[in-house]
Image 1 (cartoon, rainbow, N blue to C red):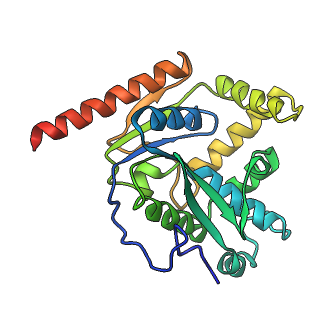
Image 2: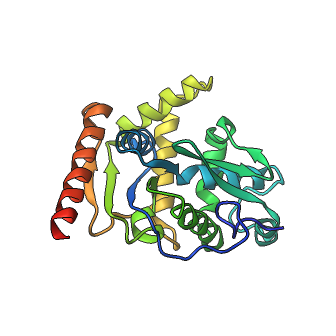
Image 3: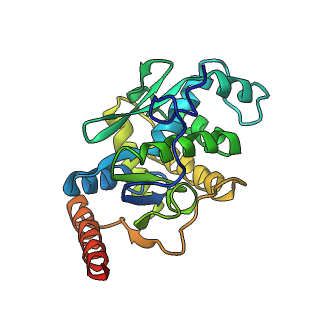
Length: 246
């Protein structure tokens, strides 16, 4: 049974329109999307959703079957048979593949690269889009990714696009890998980030780009707390303006 078209594990298709507020946070790798989105969600009481974890979970599942390239002819059939669910758990959404909860095994450089390669496919991106749109029926969310404000939730209540100097990003990613016990030269991490930026921005389906109505947010300097506080203020101002119109 293919559960990819059952976004939250139910048996009925969800209506395409989001029914709860959504904050969309887009940006390239290691721009601070994850920590920023999670922090904002915690501050305002929204659920946090990492769209990248879904792509990584799909990439991991495919790689375990020997599929690591985007042009592999087996991908359509494997997508049909793969069972993937996005399940609310407290203030987060967990990703389950074939009844297995996905954890840190998707945070390796190998899975990251495989994820970037398969994410160029339109069928893969549509699967993830359906899962995310379905999750929006569960409650208000802060969603981070690369095409959230442009494709997945073009009607998002607030959109931000995060950027940062590539050297700053490389150092952040290198620290993450060190915490996972991976010893990789920082120069190699920077090269991988640059290559991924090129793939993400140049792909045919849902390329990485700033939505016209998104706020550009540079995370190269300043603390995470300051970044979160600024976005929370933006949301509060958005809500106050909306309440004033009613």
